Length: 159
Image 1 (tube, rainbow, N blue to C red):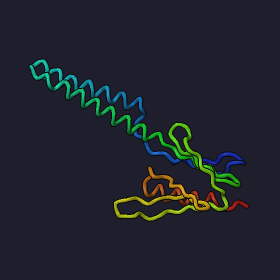
Image 2: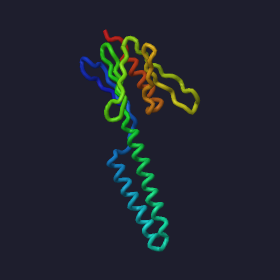
Image 3: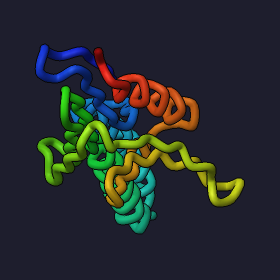
Image 4: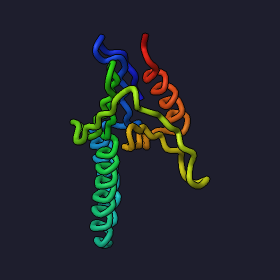
């Protein structure tokens, strides 16, 4: 989670995104190195007459590539919460905002709802006038609590 103070018009901005251990370029290097090792071993077995190992090595690398691509795609999810003097703007999307929500600051409430069962996580919900939006589903429990505290502070009236 990133927090930044912007300008006199935007009082606070919070960027919520999942942690990503490797970039897509680093993932490609990782896949290529594993493919080299896997196909080297499979090639040695194929030279000994066990050629059926080659398609399974290819399937293994194809599955790994698909899983890392899906994981990398999930890591591009962003929630940008901007709070100005009158409104709260929430932009949700991947590389650019796909959905934009706007709440009136005076009526906006931040709730950290307890988990429905012990195996689930708490829910951070921002609501205003009957509309509500869950935020920070990708965050850890402590990060979600910290974000709730920061959002409540940012929503306090500025005199």
